[in-house]
Structures are given as C-alpha cells and as structure tokens.
Image (cartoon, rainbow over all chains, first blue to last red; front, side, top):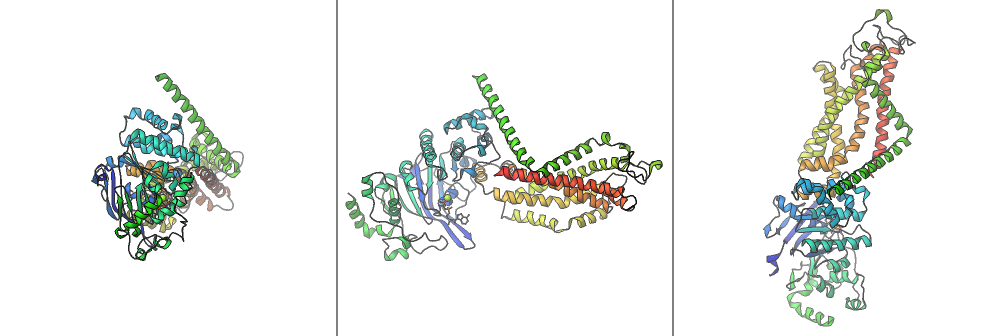
Length: 334
Length: 302
Ligand SMILES: Nc1ncnc2c1ncn2[C@@H]1O[C@H](COP(=O)(O)OP(=O)(O)OP(=O)(O)O)[C@@H](O)[C@H]1O
Ligand SMILES: [Mg+2]
C-alpha cells in the first residue's frame, strides 16, 4: 500500500484482553489501523467498545495481549519504551478533573515535562510555560493557578498544553471534550485544529460522538465491541456509510440540511442492547442487532474487505461474491 | 522589557500570596466553627509553650531532677506549692510542666521515627498495588499489627533494659505500620488517577511519582493522623512508665508520677490526680485538634 511508507503509527492485529472474575474481556480484538504524520484519525464507538483500552495500549500504559505497534517504522510494543518515544507520544485524558494533580500549580504541572525532556534551559522554563499557556489561549498569569481554581475547559487546555510541551508527533485525545459544555467543546476543538496546523502533530481523536468527526477527522475508524467495523475517509464515510452498524450510527446523527437527510439510509434503528463484552456473540459482534444479518454472520467473524485504497469494511455483506451489491447501492445513491 | 517582566512577576507573587491567605482564612473559618477544635488547639499550644519554656515558667525548675528537700515533703496543694509536693519535697507543678516536655519529646521522637519509613513503605505498596511488592510490604506490616502493642513494648523493654530509649524503640516498632496502612489506602487509589498515569506516560521517574505526584495528596491525612497519634503515643509512653518499663526516676515522666503517687492514695491524692489529669489534658488536646483538622482538611479536599 502507498500509505504504509509515510505512516507515523501503525497498529497491526492489536489485541488487549483482560482477565476478570466474570471471564476474559476482549476489550480490543484484532484491531489494525495507521495514522499518517499530521493527520487526525477519528476513533469512534459506543461506551465500552474499547477505545480507551486501545489508546492506553498505544501510549504504552497497557501491554498488548497480541499484535504489534509500529511507530516511525519501529516495532515498539512489548518492549520498554525509550525516553524519546515517551516524549513523542502524548495523551490527553477523558476526565480533565483527574488529569491534573490538585496539589500542584500550573507551573509545577508544566515544569515537570519541560525539565524531564530538557525542552528548554532551566532559566527559560517560566517563559516557556507562559508561551504554552498563550498557545492554548489561557491568560499568562494562570501559571500560578491551581486546578481547583480552573474550570473544566481551562483544565483541559492545561492538559493539552502539557501534552504539547514536549513537542510530540502524536497526541492521543481520549474524548477530550466529552466533559465540556457545547461552547467550550467548540472552543477546544478549534484550538486543537489550530495547534495541529501550527505543529503538524497527528491526533488520534477518540469519541463516542460521531457528529464531532465531521469537523475534526480526516479519516474515521468505527469500533464495535473491541473490533473495527469500518475505516474510511471522513468525507466518504458521511457520504456513504457501508457497515450496517455505521449506518445505524449515522442515522442517529442530527443533520443540518435537507440534502443530508435524503442521503440517510431509510429506517435504520437499533435493535436490542449492546451485548456484554464477556459474553461475546459468536461470529460478527453486531449480528444480534443487525437488520441485514446473513446466515454466515453468527458463524464467522468477517474479514477486512478493502473497498478501495482508503476504505475497509468488516462485513459479510460486502464479500467478493456480493460486490454487485456495492455497485447497486452506489447506483442507488447517485 | 526586563523591568516590566519583574513587575509582572511581583504582581503574580502578591496575588498568589493573597490566594493563600484566602484559603487559610476559609480553613480557619471552618475550623473555628467547632468550639472543641479550638479548645484542642489552645490546649496543644499551651502544652507546647509550657514544654518549651519549662525552665522559665516552672516555679522550681531544679525540682525536675533528683532534688531532696526534707523540710517540705508531702505538702498538700496550697499557696506555696499550687499542686503540693511529693515524698522528697519536690514541687509537683514544676515536675508536671517538665513532664509535658518529656511527653511531647516522646511523641515527636516516636512519630518522627515511625512515620517516614511507614509512609514510604505505604507509598511503594500502594503504587505497586496488586503486585508481589504490595503483598510483601503489607503482610510484613500486618505481622507488626498483629502483636498487641503493649505486649510487644513490654517484651522489648524487659529483654533489653527498661529505659526510655528502649520504650521509644518499642513504640516505634509497633507504630510505623499504621502509617503504611493509611498511605497505602490513599496511594492505591491515587495511582489510578490520570495525573499519575500522565506522569508515567511522560517518563517521570518512580521517585518523582511517589513523592511529587502521590505524596502531596496524602499530606493532609498524614498530618491529621500525626496529631491524633501524638495523644496515643503519649498515653502508651505513660502506660509503659506506669508499669515501670519506661522512664526511670528521677525523670519527670507523667506516667511514672502517677505510678509513684498511687502508693499514697487516697491520703496524698494530689500525687496521683494531678499527673493523671495532666495526661488527660495533653491527650485530649491532641485528639480534639486532630478531629478538627480532619474535618477541615476533608472538606478542603472536595
Ligand atoms: N482494566 C480493566 N480490567 C477489566 N476490564 C476492563 C479494563 N479496562 C476496560 N475493561 C473493559 O473493556 C471494555 C472496553 O473498555 P474501554 O474503557 O476501553 O471502553 P471505551 O470505549 O473507552 O468506553 P467509554 O466510552 O465508556 O470510555 C469494557 O467492557 C470494560 O469494562
Ligand atoms: Mg473511554
């Protein structure tokens, strides 16, 4: 593939299983994707689909059960990570309240990474912190504040400043805006976009909110019960979702225009609840809820099917012998 | 340019100081809402002042030692000696004031020795929760907790020689695991917090995570416990002295004084009652203060 050479991060057949008293939880199962330098990959899924687990495995907080992670073409999973690597991959957590130490000032919070990775000479740390605060659009005198004095959005901005402080090539954003109100959310997303432009940093943007992806991600990967069901360019994806699950998701996204409404697949409604990850359905994880279930779906896990260079779908509906169906549905859409 | 920068920085410092002052004022407001806490604070301050300035405030500072004055033995409390005198004519009030000094020293030494290793072990065990390190440290602490404190202290002081140093050693040995337990509980939940994970992902060293990220979040609980423990350690020290395993005469120890006085009950009641009241006074003071701190600091956490 063309993409392979210039990818920053490449995840191959990643698995992360947890052993719990109830049984083995396959939180992440056979997940593969790549992230190019400076791009944003959206990782979307409902609660419990394994997004955070995938993120923690990528940043090295979890060791994968199986599979490999390549960063800048070097295999990095299952080994102790170098200091340089730890600098190069950063994370912004879901809960801004817990991601800043309540006993430290903003100065202390930002000094640690700057010192640890010798970003600037010791004498210039104070200035550098104020620069960082300016970058994330906080007043310079926030350097003296403590997290308890900050609003949720301001905390998240400090967390972003911390991630950015060491000039990483990749930041994993784990639902960075889910704790924020709508206007704050818009502000943070705009800020993240500006920072990406300025520093050419790649994002893995994790969210359960598909509508966010439209403005944020260049490519989108949809997860369901630990597996990916579809990866596509955001534009293609919103134009024509392929997997029944993603169609279901998109049909529940509020739309702006009439044209968009017309594009929506007809009457896609969810049936039933998400199965428990301990008691996984056989075959395709989505088959109990799928309105287009085939006989094979509860017997065989669907393989990746490349629709084109930028698009994969994991669904039996699109197997080779059903390529006709794609052609048909494309025709219908146009 | 440069002067402007220092100007700004001075302004920040002032703001920062104001913020601290505000926090303190808020804390004091909450603390003083409970009259018992304030009483505790006053008692503790009074005891500390008496202990520190004992040589100057005691009417007969020399009576702290082995002084004999046969002209004034067993005098009941009165104008000359507010709390009376003992069998060798020493002023009881002076001995009690020096007794405070002794009790505080005992408390400070024991906690000063027990808390740091206890805290460090608790931090390590909590941070490595669920691993072999955790199990090893916590089971080791459990062994000490399983031994009844007074019995351990008694066996140590009787195997070695019964003196104040060995008594403190004994109390220290049975005290550190309480700090390990306390900090373990806090650290094991703090290690799941994102700010700890963030430091790990960033590549921060384990000592940094233990002492800069986790420990500061345990300090208020530790501080409260130290205050409460001062009372308990003083009681245990006094108990050991009471049974003759702690301070030896002529050291002015409150427990020893109670024990010596007991022989003269009920006729020379002051020899027992006043030192016993003094113990109650100190212990009560630390307990009330500790409870007050706990309430204030618990609210501050939220
Ligand atoms: N440490 C763990 N031990 C056991 N099971 C876990 C652990 N972490 C996650 N899981 C399980 O793995 C599954 C995926 O969890 P994960 O947190 O990755 O989901 P998520 O997509 O991030 O969900 P959310 O939107 O709620 O954050 C869940 O069923 C969860 O219960
Ligand atoms: Mg999550």
